[in-house]
Image 1 (tube, one colour):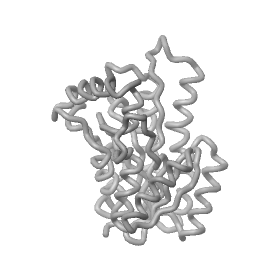
Image 2 (tube, helix red, strand yellow):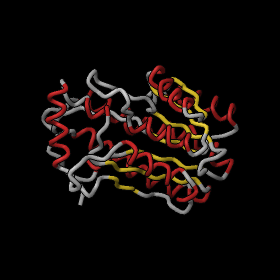
Image 3 (cartoon, one colour):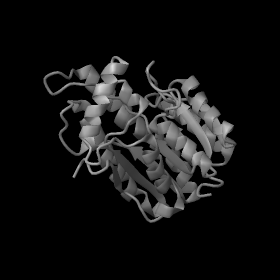
Image 4 (cartoon, rainbow, N blue to C red):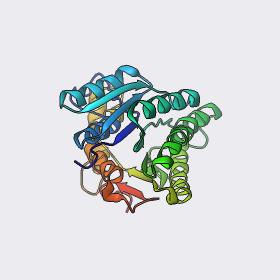
Amino acid sequence: MKLAGRVAVVTGAGTFKKPFTQADQVGNGAACAITFAREGAVVICTDRDLSAAQETAELIKAEGGSAHAYELDVTQSAQVNRVIEEVAQAFGGIDVLHNNVGIEVQGDLLAVDDDQWDKVMEVNVRGAMAASRAVLPYMQRQKRGSIINVSSTASLKWSPMQFLSYSTAKAGLNHMTKVIARQYAADQVRCNCIVPGMIRTPHADALYASEAEAAVGHKFRDSRCPMGRQGSPWDIANAALFLAADDSSYVTGLLLVVDGGASL
């Protein structure tokens, strides 16, 4: 197994579901956590909602994998530091950090307000920074580590759905990935970024008020993809596994676009 003996921390490992979301659907973070566990990792499932983290951990345990759930709000740096220290001491280190937390607020330049802007930056950029900062000393000591950030193709181009603060935050995350990758390459700490396009997730259902509206919305999202369909959370999980495992031991600073050709 590709991650046997490794410890992987996944932020945003829970799955937010609308009432009409299918019961067996999981989000990107949960899919990555499950995939890491299937490849032998001890997975630390974290989420602001502890019950959501526990739900993912239980899915892993039901398959015979190893998982532990922690409550974690990435905007609270003291809590981030405490949880990472607890995990590192309990499990002997941290090998993989998968930064999956992200929020969006709809609005173009004329619509966005300061508080919304600041909140998106706090969660999407500072949250990933704080978690990365917390794990880095442990990865430096063991001379091995993989930090994986999750961005969006919204960071690369204009979108008909206006999320200016989100797009800008994700562009910042892209650059932070490259800076961290170059700065700590000599420590054998790698930092890469997955750049998803349209992915059919339970979180995407949150864009819609009803099942009927979601059906229309997802049909439109499918039509925007060159392959005629959105990707799935398992497409993101497969990309994350590559970046977490030794298969990518000489890969750092990469923006790995997973979008079915939508950004071409």
